[in-house]
Structure formats: structure tokens, C-alpha cells
Image (cartoon, rainbow, N blue to C red; front, side, top):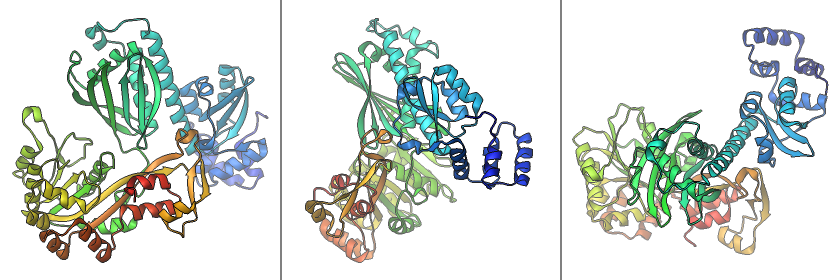
Length: 559
């Protein structure tokens, strides 16, 4: 490869830029010496990134690839310094017979490439990729390597010692570069980069397993030596301000970590087991990709039905669904939307999962006597316009909520029910008077999360007769993921919310007051309000290739 080529020359040869534009770009570079000419030409809109890549690929006889679809060998990644890779934007893919396949955005960065050669002792085979996907891949794979290396170091550092009599004082004053601290930091970083919702640290007789929940599915990540477990749990307790000497009872706490995009709150739950304390770290972050972010994660039809509910002057709105269906995420998006209005908004939560500017948030504390019931009674004396009750768990909380809704407040809350219509039955089961339910309720949103087909390994398949019977005869093909590095070989990447929404109008109030059945309420909502059920919305997503029949079956109640 020639080492005296310049990107400007290559682009001029292909007619993408002229001499005047190059002069302007070079003048701009004198004021921004940290930027390369190619980057400047793109920023000035003289060329597109694709044009730059095509020109480089043609002149240097290189291949342009989608780095997200490439298989990546972590051992190759570990051979290169992370800071060097992030600064110069390249990612090793593999090493074979001292030849390293390297993806970069700038093959003319000869000094950086030479440094890689010096570090690895390998001949470089260069591939090209777009900047955005390359940055994401670098961030993800170096986080993966860092966590694996930290686990290896911890296993080596603690493998020979017995920590049954751990010196807690020493652990509290441990160096920031200590293996245990490095291990916890690396596990959290990896979880954030892979959009995991939970980290499970589970002790067994001979080892401790670390598993992560990604897109709603638990995946095994790494195994730690048994003697690493107690120091790791103690470090988590220190971070969460918990009692590190107490091992006999459950403990709950939280801490937060700083990332490139801000702070991530982490909720900690500890539970004693036969072989020690199990820790579950819930990552309360919204950094993951969200479909329809400006519409509370709802499609156009659901958004049109839901938005008028938020303009009500009083009444209660329920978000329903099982654990892990994204109810809290939806509520926080609604709160952020309402916080822009001239309203006094207060919440009572267990726990406070996300801090929302401009909103008064209270966390329940049963030990001190601050329950949902007591907190809600107190909030009503705080002159609120909008009240958010994190979860309606019992009859007393439900009763106070509906009375607050009737007396001029907007109340937002969640319920654990299988469908929108069943929430009415659930409230009646809690002991709330039917007339209160009928007169307080504005509407109900039932929500589920479905895993999306991985776009990097998706393939179209014909439906079987059984599948067409389930989906409808007009759906002849569906999409499934084969499994690749980008989706941890699951065939899925990311999740999408599906909703079932109905508004309580005058006719529905009368039906609720006369003890109409759940089926009657649902039929009315479908016929008069054109409500689409969770299953019907799921079928549309399957037909569009967004998700699979297997995911649909999880929300269709086997029907």
C-alpha cells in the first residue's frame, strides 16, 4: 500500500470534490488540527461518507463490509490497546497465521496502523466500514474483552485464598485498581454496552455463575471461582451502602455509575441462598434503542388513542402487564412529557427507578412506616395535579387512588393483569366499589414486550399450514434470525412494545356499573372503539417481519 496517498487526491480523481472545496477543507483543518481531511469534507457536506469509502475501496482495492454482521474473535480484539482502537477507529476481527483482519474507517492513517503492527507483530489485512457501526462495535467488543479479562484476573488473584474470614476493613480501603473493583466495573460496563437489564451473580457449590438478562432472556456469561464470590458481594454492598457483615437476611439498595451518556442507576437485591448470597443488579437505564420514542413507544394507532387520556383534568390511567413488560418505562416517559406543563407532579414509588427533573419523587420505606397507603394519603395534602403510584398492590392503595382520581387529580399507576379489560375485575377483586371504578377510570393500557428479529441474520421463511391457521391464511412468509455474533446467537436483537388500549366512555361506565363481564367489555371496546388486542397487534408485527410466531405465542395466551 502506498504511504503517500491523500484522501483529497483520491476524491478529486473521482470527481467528488474540486480544488476550491479542497482549499476550503484545508483552511478549516488549520483551525481544527485534530480532525482529518476526510472527516472535514464530510462535515462540510462536500461528500458523503459512502463516497469516501467507495473512493478508498476503489483506489486501494479494499472491501467495504458491515461490521455488525462480521464474526469477531475476542482474542484478536484483546491483542490491541483499547485506547488506540477508540482514538483511531479500528477493530480487529481475527488473526490467522500472523495475519490480522482489521476493520477501519481510515486506511490512510498509516501511523496508527503501524502502531498496531508493532503491538501485534502481525501483517494487516484492511477492511472498510461506516463510522457509526464501527464505533458501536468497538465499544461493545472491548467491553466484552474487558469483562472477560477482569474475571480471569479475579479468578487468578483469589483462587488460592479462603475468604470465609474476609477482612472487611481491608476491602473497604482497597485500591481502585484491585481485581474485585475492576471485575465489578467491567461487568457493569459490559451489561450497559449489551443493553442488559439485569446482572445475576449466583453462588453454587463449586463456582459462581454470572448471567445477564438481555432482551428478556437470561444468558450465561462467565463462571467465577468460588472464592471470588464473597469479596464481589462485599464490594456490591459497599457501593449500595448495605451492611457488609449481614448475610442472613435479604437486603436492598442502589448505586449509580457514570457512563459516556450520563448516569445509570443500579438497583441491588441480595438474597441468602444455600451457598451464599445471590445478587441481582437491575440496570435502570433508557439508553437502549426504543421504537417510536416520541410516542411513548407506541405505534401511531395506539398513540392516537392514548394521548387524549393525558389531557384529562382528573381520573386514573392504568398501565397493565406482567413483570418485565416495560410498564415503568412507559410511565417515566409519560411523566417526562407531563413535566413540561405547569403542573405539580408527585410520585410514590418502590423504588425510585429514575430521577425526573421537576417532579417530586418519594420512595416507600416500610421499615420506617412509609407505605404506599401512607405516602399516597400524604401526597394528597401536597396540592398535586398529577400523582403517580408506582404499583397498585392492595385494596387500600387502590381505594385511595380512585378516590383521588374522583376528587380532581390525575392518577397514573400500574396493575399486574393479563389484558386491559381484566384490570376492572382485578380492582373489584381488591375490594374497590364498582361505582368508584366506573367513575374514576379514564382508560387502560395493556402492554407487552416482544423480541425483534435480529436484522443482521434475518431470513425469510414460508409459513406452515399450522402457522397460517394461527396467523391468518394471507400471511405466507415470516422472518426468523439464524443467530449471529450480534445477537448472541439467539436470532433476536432488541424488543418492541405492543399495546391494547381502551377508553372508558359513558357507555363503558354504565357497563362497569352494571357488572358487565370482562368479555362484554372487551367486545364493546373492539366493536365501538376499534381496539386491537395484543394478539392482533402481535400478528401485524409478525406479518411485517419485526418479530416471530414464537414471540407472538407468548402474548396470545395459547389461543
